[in-house]
Image (cartoon, rainbow, N blue to C red; front, side, top):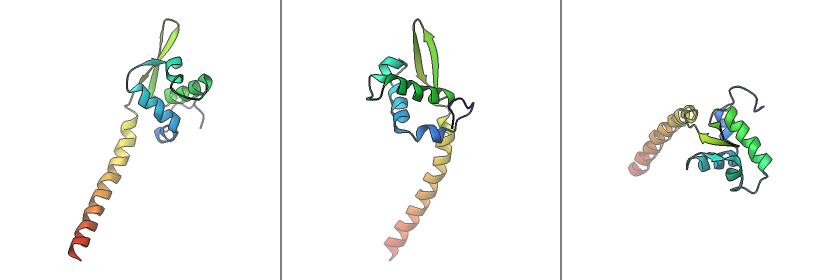
Length: 106
């Protein structure tokens, strides 16, 4: 899937551990690419590529401040993923409760 695609699937984006780590880093606040890249063993260009994917998915925004570009977390697109996962949480909660009752009765 190309980062240039207008609406990248959020599940594709968060499937990558580096991108999840970048999102975790940005929860602490906006940061320039050099500061973000300093937290990783990957090269700055590799981190920039991940940031482009995150930006294309609308999970981060990019703002030019002076000579730097600051990246900021925008978690709203994660709500779609959370809504999907919430259905499974309810499913497993019901099934585990049923299993518990069954095991207690036998």
